[in-house]
Amino acid sequence: MLSYVRKHTFTITIGVSFFLCGFFIVANILHLSDRDVLIGLVAGAIGGITILIVSLIEDRKSRPVSVRTA
Image 1 (spheres, rainbow, N blue to C red):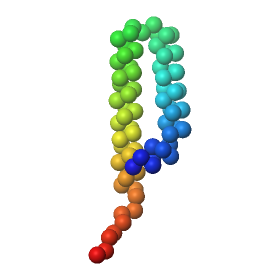
Image 2 (cartoon, rainbow, N blue to C red; image 1 turned 90 degrees about the vertical axis):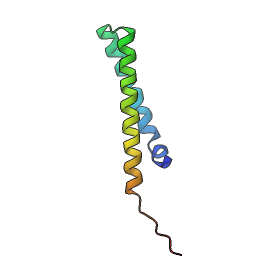
Image 3 (tube, rainbow, N blue to C red; image 1 turned 120 degrees about the horizontal axis):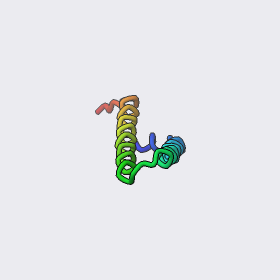
Image 4 (cartoon, rainbow, N blue to C red; image 1 turned 90 degrees about the horizontal axis):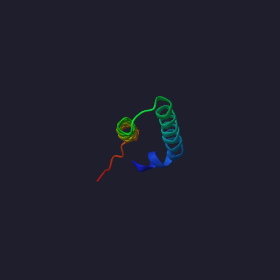
């Protein structure tokens, strides 16, 4: 299961970096309060963790099932 994360570490890192950079740029342009920034970061973290969990589940489902014979 962690092989999926290892395989996509570079993509995940770039995605998180772009999200944070873009989020803070927009937060500064819109003059968001600290509370608004915190809510946005928490929402982004929840969304990211949800996507990670779904991706791991899908990766696990797509693996071929090994059948053991006695």
